Image (cartoon, rainbow, N blue to C red; front, side, top):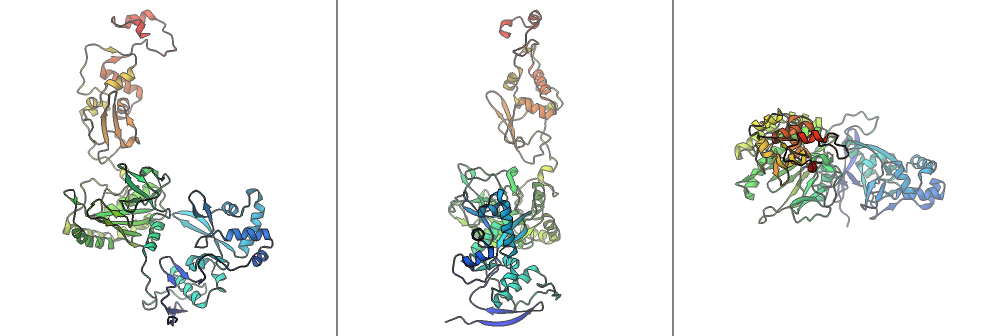
Length: 590
């Protein structure tokens, strides 16, 4: 027996539409598509081979057109096949279309003739759109000719609306026009001057609740910028990229993606990030005496956290973790790290209960629906509780934060008055500039460091009764000039950077004592280490030769004047012997 269908007519912006109550959900609000084709599962071609040949004028062009229209995805978008990744990617250039149909670049005239036929008969249409701030052209095939699913995306209907008028039933056309008008927020027809208005709540049925798959699709498209999740797992005491994750263990992702991502590669650094997809907040209850709070206490505090999140601009996604929430705001048009960091710093500054340390562009955050197992006795599944198709340009998010500043501050004060401050004792930048541009705070220094900066001998200098001749001064300096004694600093202890050019806020440098020479390691050196000569040169802002002369004076050594290049000749051996100490054999020197 068929389900009973009840229909009634309503008026929307001066146009009549028919609404139905039916157990079948024809409209998928999460993916903005309509159940328009009731065909069988799989590809449905509404065109015979004879019809296609008569349209194209020749069997060769008909076969080429058939190859092209069959290279589509579920959205009727023409795609190319990546043999290495075994995935489809949208074709964005005419060269990719020529490759699909097998026309070489030398035969571009044949391609131009074929493409003119296809576009003239409305078989293919182009759509120019902005994706993450970049302009791209996609090619779509007319759904009147071929479809892969029974669902018709709203954007595809907008592109081929005139052609679909003779294919779809009146009910589908009315409903699709209604949804298209609601999306555009303007009259559907150019001669319709009726002002738009919000329909009554009883006129439009409630949108269906999003499934897990629908929320994940939005998360991948908006939060991850359509690149998919770049996931990492802890292995060998380090974070390594994984393309085959084990969902039963801790799993992290980077919302801002890097082209350095490769299976087995270590976690991406800030300078490796190429696509800025999302800003984020890490709202956490923290620990007490190094231990997690019980889950019932965390649940009570999450109620106040949700009150703070409710005052924010609409997030693109909210992930509930064991100890709090990860809140994402998808970026639009952000192309450099400075613009991204400025907005991220402002978010941290406005939301006082957010973790101030979770602000670096390559930050790792929990993957939705992965399992938190840091507490082995109580594993916790991270849940994606909301997802929305919203993106923010940097200027818009800044304006929204300013407009909601009072409400956000009041909600944060309510949380802190109930549970105390969750901020760590860290120095934060009060403006919206990136952290690297702020001035140093309480730069570490002492009398020895200040003396080296002026190329003066430090207080620990002790003059020897006589100078020591050294034929190779540089190796001697590296072996005997100890950085700890020269700068009066400890070994193996994390310290602030001593260079003026590096305004670090936290300890980022260390002195290492090796058998042959000391090393100064700091994050500003991109993984390299400085020896004592480099340290003096950078501290005093002098050349390497000046730094060597200074250290020669510090070690009471000198280089005899006869020490020249091996290929040069010693012209005055008598003068050399006169300047050489009596206990030194000239033959050994030569």
